[in-house]
Amino acid sequence: MVAIELHEVRANALRAALDAHSGIRFVVGDVLSTALPGRPYRVLANPPWGIAAALVRRITEPGTLLVRADLVLSVPMVQRWVASPPRGFAASRGTYLPAAAFDPPARQDAAVLVLRRLPHRGEARTAAARRKGHPGGSGGR
Image (cartoon, rainbow, N blue to C red; front, side, top):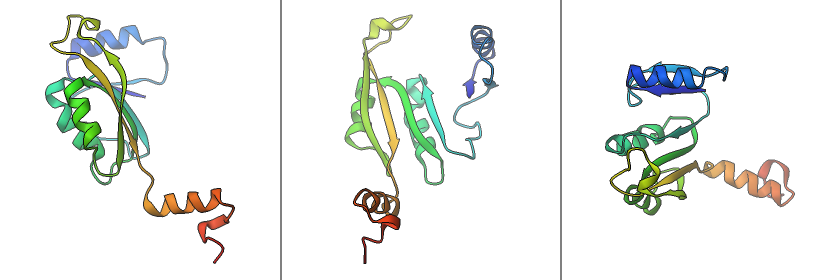
């Protein structure tokens, strides 16, 4: 697991709070410019809402290996992405978080945007054929 934090003081606080959890690598840097993993990965983030659109574009651009992302965003942003998800992804609204749940309180209510990669067309056809009992997806032809 990699934790990315732009501010060194916050990164150090995270490091101290999560010190007992081995396997977490802390990176002080900008999430918009830190290298993405070269293998399938998931994102769990509460990003600054001002960079949310750029972050969603970056992690869902062609060639990335994102499998799923759970992002805490403002309700209007979540509604926007659910109505028009990035190409190749399904979008849904997860947990609702009232503004008062944040310290300090947020300016508006939030929700979790859940992005899941859709299978490629060939993968979907093969999976469907296998469910019908046709190994290899040939459909028995």
